[in-house]
Image (cartoon, rainbow, N blue to C red):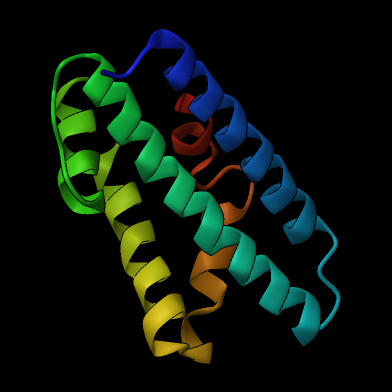
Length: 123
């Protein structure tokens, strides 16, 4: 059983990860910095969907995996836009599993203020 304190702890960890991601985006100067930001994007996104899972479980709604959790969170009003998060999932998958340098600008724009901040901060 997931408790309210589990949800609050997950939200706090997500907030901290997002702040580190935003800091990395703001201070990127070269390819090595960019690699670090891509890594921060990956773990921040992992925390995002796992936070949604914890929150939904606390509400009594089971979900398994990032895509179902995102769609369910949207249906329950926990996130304002599931399409942005699903795009971010694709970016994470490409960056993690394919290591495609050509998609790096997308995780950067996903992490940039004004693009998906409302989704990152909603959770």
